[in-house]
Length: 500
Image 1: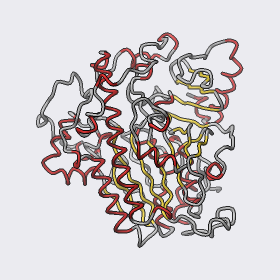
Image 2: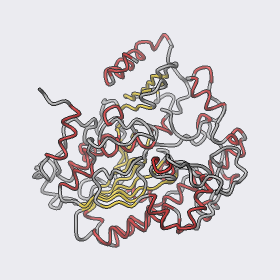
Image 3: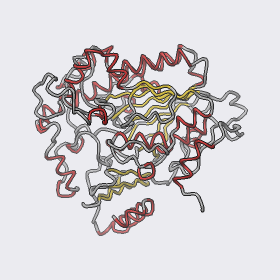
Image 4: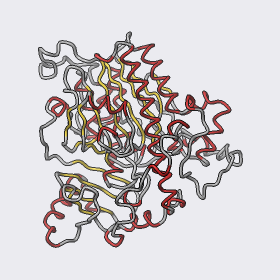
């Protein structure tokens, strides 16, 4: 009986040779020394344009700017699913959600689907994960070395209460609990033990954190990443993910970063209050009209406070990333290390009157993506091709000369790293809320984006003419052929849609 796709994917990591000979296509005479290490800097909920190098009016990111100037910057990169756990599963497996089957933030990653860590470890690398990954359960998914939220809570000791107060509730997306099952039997141990504040619901608008700066998750991850580099960097080739919570809520940066952004220094986005509500799906309309987690955001002044603290979080994140990159240089490892920066999804931050992620507008489903390959990438170059984060795994495996399993959903980006100006008409896709009655799907191809909602109206946008995605063209007779074409391409990619 022929092997199925899923069976093949589940066995490849176990049976693949530890490494393959690097072909002449990968190493030229000008590249006598191949980078042997990978440092993947990963944030949470960083909107794709929230970088000061991109002339953003509020973002202050000098360290990310410096990295971007030294890398190829993908200006149209997309996550596969605008929520944490499914998106991160795609990052580490090279598969879209319907193939890796990590449906939502409560779904444990399937054991049989192997990750980048398995492949790098089998090739002789020490694979490390420091910080957030939202595995949901206790599987390590191939990592040899792992430090996560629970280690941070142990480091905090009694100060963990400060973080419990800032969250105000159980929230595994923010690491408390890190593993959902730990609190299922007997409930939330912090219930009635938190100090309540004046928030109207369960997510605070945002303020300066009461946690000392050195004790924030980001500072902890930066220190432990530097410790890893010093301990292992000169001894072993490494594949290391240094993963941060910020700028994800709570929007409570360290005091000095909060001071950078007084409320009066920011304005609400141009799209605030301007959406034609009758032309968008009802779930979008409902979220614009009523933000349940933070009802204060109906007040424009409170909304400006939230915007300000989001960018304070980004500034705090940037400072910690700078510490790590500087340490990599100080250890003499920079010339032998591929550096990737990305985020698991974006953040609407008031665009369209929306907050958080969960939608297919670019601020939510788009991500920053920088890739630096010593000896290959030309510093400060931009690539405008539409790319998916499913391509990160095959790209890194190819760059390091490691056999890439068949059946991955994303092509390698190495051709774009060598030639950033090349064009591509290949579409990218995203999914959300699979296995539910509200499942929805997205395709981006060329200037066009089409979104299919299982029980709602579709969306069609021309992002060249309407980059803010304010004019839903679905249903317009003059564009019926374009809408039909995009829908057909989407349904061909995901055949189960025809039965939805």
